[in-house]
Structures are given as C-alpha cells and as structure tokens.
Length: 171
Image 1 (cartoon, rainbow, N blue to C red):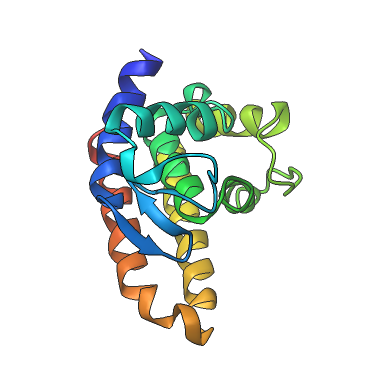
Image 2: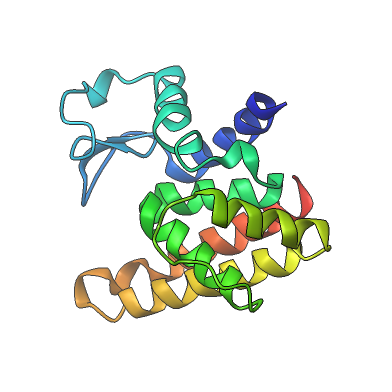
C-alpha cells in the first residue's frame, strides 16, 4: 500500500516540478537539481529515475509510509520544496500547538511518530495538516521578505494551497 500512495504522491510532485529548467539549484529536471545531485546527468534524467530518487532520498528518509496519507503527501511535498529537516521542523512545530511537547529537531523519530499517531487516532489529522500548512505559509512569507525570493511567494502560496487541498481530499 505504501508504494501505491507514493506513486500517487510523486505524480503530483512531478506536475508541480515540471520539466527541464534552470533555477537556484542550477540545471533542474523533475525537481531534481544539479546542485543536489552533482554526479547526475540532469538532461538525460528519466521520469522513472526521478521517481526513484524521490522514493530513496525523500519519501523513505522522512518516513512518509508511517504517516497518515494526506499528512505524508504534504510532508513529502514540503521536504522536496524546502528541504527535509526544515519541513520536519515545521511539522513538529505544528504538533507542539496541540500542547504535545516534542523536540523540534528536524528528525522523524519515535517521538514525532507517536505524536502524529496519537493525533490521528483522536481525529486531529486534518487539524494538524492545517497547522502544518500555516507554519509553511509563515516560513514562505518570511523568506519572501528577502529580495532574491520575493518573486516566488505567489507560486509558493499556490503550491501549498493545492497541496493542502490534495492532502485533504485525495489521500
């Protein structure tokens, strides 16, 4: 089941990330950048190779398979867009809003997984998603105050709005 959820999630990610471009990470294809993967021939990267990179370098390390599906998708998207540790820290900050005190350390460990599962079992997954969304929105808003990032704010907002909707309705 985990791989099936991943396949659905990664197809959405590939739509967000698009084809061959040049951005702050240098030459980028399907969201895989030359800066992050310097030994990869980005121009020749296939969709299947990109999917495998997302599985191995994002989905599995941040333990998306151990999270409720919508939250897994939103964390997966966050990790790709802003970095895994930052995304996890924002999720942990959202968890702490429930008065569940966990370390905000950017690591998905037993403490974070237990907190997420406790919230899910008490019917708070959608509320956690909403708070995670707000933490992500605050991060992008702060980042956009830097001149070099100001032009990206509307795109980031559109992406997280769409990702939240998909997390709530499709997973």
